[in-house]
Length: 167
Image (tube, rainbow, N blue to C red; front, side):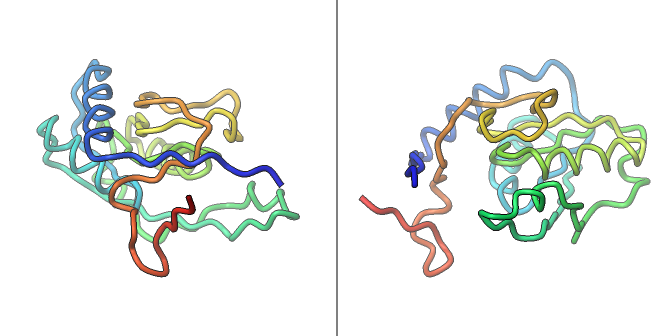
């Protein structure tokens, strides 16, 4: 079994990624939709820097994926939390998450915003094109491309549920 490379980021690394993202935006956004939980912290940082006051959250759940059951990667999402359509309709919405891995979550959220009449744009700190299930699709904005499992500073040492780092 091949071991996945891990990359541990500092707050300074995250600040640099946010600065890199800020330089990419070429238009104003009327609202931000942060995908729980990974998009909450980067979304807060970006919304502060971009002076976006209308902040929404989305929580999406997929059935667990086993190593022997890849077809479950294509399962329909369950939206646990999502803003009402009238809050999205006709508005430019910046959708934020930490990582675009398989692309399932952000693609689902983007499609739901579009179906509500919103104008969605996706943004992540890290894009992993090697895991992307949607080859013709990628985030509109990303801070960096990676093939590593990224550990953000807010994920370190959070008890039994947190990320354990093996040396």
